[in-house]
Image (tube, rainbow, N blue to C red; front, side, top):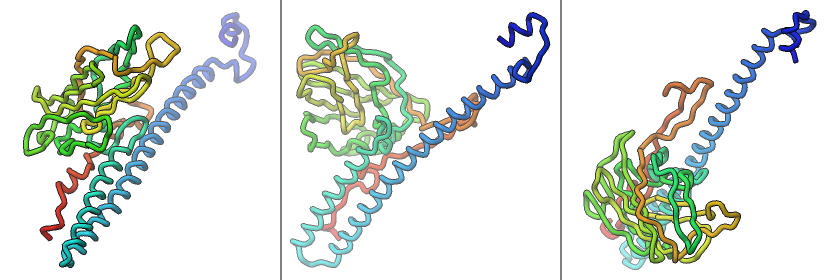
Length: 302
């Protein structure tokens, strides 16, 4: 309305009819919107760090209990007491693994050395369940738990998971998942396939097999295909183009599909200008699973 008034040659009667002020208002509005987005990003980063801090504090407390067990074991001459302390320590070791794997923020596992991992492709893939097709989109693939930093993730098969069928494959040292880190910007891949009631994921780094994990699909419906040792998850939510959630089941099939992963740092932008790396907060989070903190713990040898 202001622009039409000015185009007729009529005078500017108020500040609201000042075209310069109008342009400036639009500029300030855009700047405020950008600042709001930046604040939301900073808040998200603070939430991530707060969640990590809580878990690290929990891990510290568990490690302190393990230290106390070790001190008692060195002072004891009772083999039964040492065995009890060892069993307690073994359970604490497992508790660290559970704590790390359950530290999730917005679907992402934060403490397995994969925060920032980026799925390069594919964008979609299709699972056939009976005569229904279930489409998995790029955002339904979580690779944040896949450790590409060269730690020993996956060295111990998590046999306590009921649907875990088998964990095969090693490279590098004995029982090691892999030992050579991938530089930032470099790639790994997961070959995912479904058939015969099984979902199979094969992780390869530098064209070498690192880990194969197979899980059983126990029921039909929306669910998470969770490869717990690999740190790879696929969310199967509903059938494409349908209001009904058919999900995936034992009769589902999907041809082997390569998912390319790029190692990156976790990144949040913090300002109004996001054209350069200086406009981002970047940080790398290591894998805090117990294999990387402790190796193994034996109290019997003192």
